Length: 193
Image 1 (tube, helix red, strand yellow):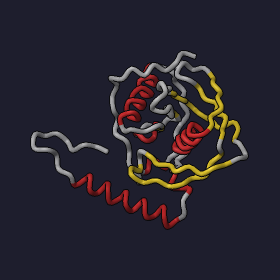
Image 2 (cartoon, rainbow, N blue to C red):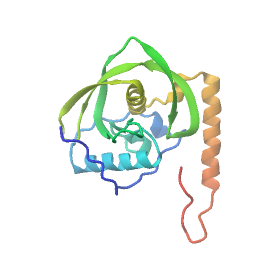
Image 3 (cartoon, rainbow, N blue to C red):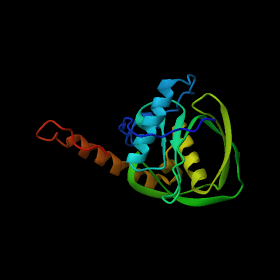
Image 4 (cartoon, rainbow, N blue to C red):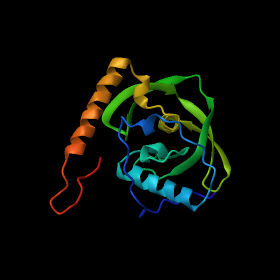
């Protein structure tokens, strides 16, 4: 497998904010492993690192394809950018644990979600080759969170109705506030979250 070479200089794409119907839709399988897929993956990594985040799914940037990127390496470790097309969880540990999750599509909101502590995932890399890896800890949390995005599920869907509703109303207000912002005097648009 040729490693994904994150080189920077790609395009930062706007991240969709909840509620947006595209975030609740099921993404379609990737069928073409070509330069456009590689470019999408590079753009998604650039967007993820800039946000900053540790994972991003294609639907979060408005592309309804089963592609996720992630890099859960710590600050003292070299970067390990991964791009997974058509990822599927092949095995889940029986042992579960809570982790406080957040989401680039739901900024400034966090909640504890219980997930399997380890998962084995199969996917197709950007060269069209089948891959399989076991993820544990934060990597396991991240890959499960991003695969949920491909299935139209957000981390707040694991919460109770009241808490989910409160977060959704706050996000609706944030989107209204952002829509009211006027462009800067010289025609530059306001910064995007």
